[in-house]
Length: 165
Image (cartoon, rainbow, N blue to C red; front, side):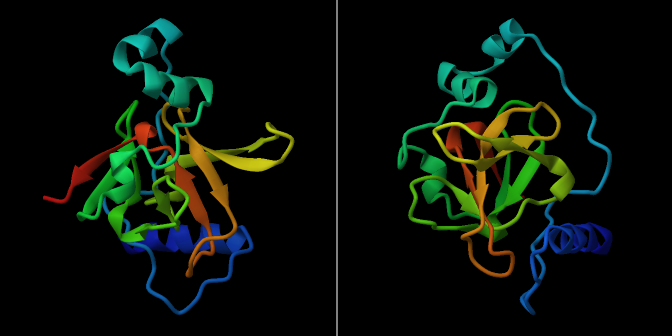
């Protein structure tokens, strides 16, 4: 567990994010391991996902703000990719951003997500996707709370909540 926390701290420092004296993010089920990729055809994804999940996860859509029940989820647990089940975020890093989408200040493990530059809608944003299946999750912005200062603004339909045991 210490190793996973150290990896998160190193990733944040490498990204130029100063770490405050606050406790490190909870790492839940995450580990720093090589993520084996899942590749499926569009037809296979359409069989596994609802139309709304397919639109967001596979076609880079966005759900309407304030429509996800996960925006109000307050129980302890983890948020996993709705397409492949990879653990992504802990309830310990969730916060109310007021934006209408579930928001987190850090992933469970930085190797569980990937980012790309998104230049749609006449602006540049950082897209966040699942490291295992490549599903579009949302975007990350530099206006979140301490200790990272990041806001991972995720589409609730791209996530599933698993309560702590």
